Length: 242
Ligand SMILES: [Zn+2]
Ligand SMILES: [Zn+2]
Image: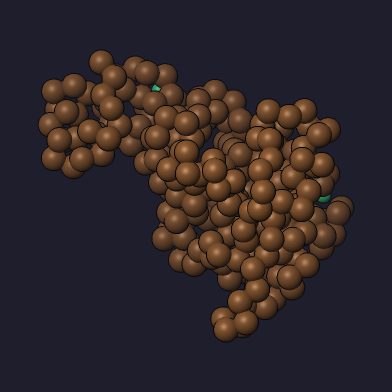
């Protein structure tokens, strides 16, 4: 029996429900023993990314490096939990479209467990979640990248800055477009907010998103932040869709 997520989120009611009706794994819908939403089989089936990847040449980086040896200092380095394949892709869909927000926490825990030391090598000042289109966030009620970034921030002890980058206007969802059209669709969609009072010049930033595919969105965000004097040193995502 599927139990509405809102009931499971209530600690007292959720505990009673878990006792009488055990939760289903959010990846494969089997009954399992646990409360984090993912059964052991699904956890083992995720194709985890072991090393940071350069978004330009798609090569893995050697350990401890913060720039791609081939592409140099302008390379954008992606640290992703795993490849966009089942069951990770199914879990991300549950988080984004079915209101299962607690998965964002679990993804952050897994990213930090597997890539925490690599992330700390970048010595970032802030984490910046990629903003959603306002109308889309209003409809969904949350931005999954913000939820993911909030838990990452707690675990990595790097603050979130969710006011430095804003999204303007309405665009088609990137996922619905062919790869060749994504760059044009996302062009000039972001604006960097300059706050003189906070003296926030020259920050080293890590962008946070749920899925990175062509990299067009994060590249555009990085370009925008760079024009405001900041440096995007890396990107963290739950999944990399190759
Ligand atoms: Zn499962
Ligand atoms: Zn490269």
